[in-house]
Each structure stands twice: as C-alpha cells, then as structure tokens.
Image (cartoon, rainbow, N blue to C red; front, side, top):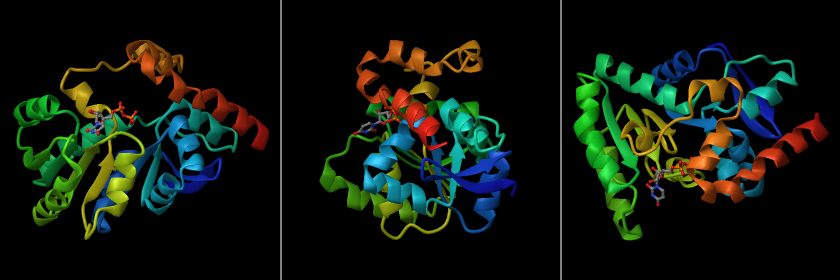
Length: 236
Ligand code: UDP
C-alpha cells in the first residue's frame, strides 16, 4: 500500500496515492475503520477527545479536503485530494463485483428508502443486506447493532455526521471484519437531496463556499477553516 503514515496538527493521516487500493488492501488484511479527514474534522478532533481517539484508532485515514492536502504539501508530501464520497462509491462498485454484503446506516428515512430502491439499479449486483436510517430513538441502537453484526457485512457505510459516525463505528461493540466508513452527507447526494459543488469550484479549492451557500447554518462550524489554516502556518 502506497501510504505513508503522518499527521496534520497532531491528527494522524495516511498520505495515500491510491485510496481505493489502500482500502481494498485493508479489506484483505481483515478490515477496519476508514476515516476521511478534512480541515473541519481535524480541528474538531483536537477539541473533542472522543473524535480524536476514534481517528487515532482508525486503520486508514484518507486526506479528503483541500486543507489537509495543503497541510501535507507543506510537509513535502504531495498527495491527491481523495473525496470520501468518491471512495465510498468506488467501494460500492467493487462490492457488487466481488459479491460483498453491504450495509448502509444513517441519513433520513426518505433518503434511506430512496437509496434502497435506487442503488441496486445503479450498481447492478449490489447486495444491500442491512439498511437503517439515522434517526432512531437511542434505545433502538443496541438491537440494530446486533442485527447489523449478524449480517457479517463486508462494507458498512455510515452517514450520521461528524463526529457521531466516527465514534459510533469506533465504539460499535463486537465489530470485527469488513470495512467501516463514515460518509457524512454522501447518502443525501446519492439520493439527489443535496448537490456536490461543481468541478470548477473543486479546482479552485472553494468547495467550502458552495457548501456554505447551500447550508448557511454551517457558518459557525466553518470558522474552523481559517483557524485550521492559521494553526498549520503557525506550527509549520
Ligand atoms: N444524520 C443522521 N442522524 C442524525 C444526524 C444526522 O442520520 O441524528 C445524517 C444526516 O441526515 C446526513 C448525515 O447524517 O445525511 C450528515 O451529513 P452532513 O453533511 O452534516 O455530514 P458532516 O458534514 O457532519 O460529515
């Protein structure tokens, strides 16, 4: 696996050239947790010990986000930006070909219903063995976790938002085998409820601006971005 373990502001990250290959390699070695790290999450991990612990324990942390790629470049590590939503989709395509059992956890009931219908049509051969939305009452989770584990999934995509999806995966009792990955708003995008920023905004590294216009309520969370840049410049 062409991945160099390093860190950004003390948060571990693997400087991967090919994240799909790294993920498939991890699957062969018995699986584990995949985290897609961006600047906002890096700052959250520094402030929230539970999230920091979950990321530190993850088997693969990929650089998702222009900020993390920029911080790695300042350390002399040139890596491509690897959006988590793209890795998650490639893993679904691989799952269909390889006959993997796939579980989806999270997002609204309407989004989950849409995905259950649409995904097997868009990715023929995809075996969805367990699908559950993310707005369950707290007391429902232990049973759901048991049902999920009983399916022995090869791939579990979790859309509960940061930090919950990372800590939920890290703390899932009895988790063993398979790839487990937090995917944020990916289910909403696949269901057509949210849009990804256009490519040209990605090229200009201003996807954050698109996100802010789509979801203005995120402005407070996004103050982490200048704080991240400032910290990287100070510590570098
Ligand atoms: N979500 C959920 N349960 C909750 C809160 C959020 O399933 O209690 C879902 C939400 O519907 C969305 C995803 O988690 O599909 C989080 O998306 P967001 O874009 O906010 O991800 P983040 O930026 O936090 O990674």
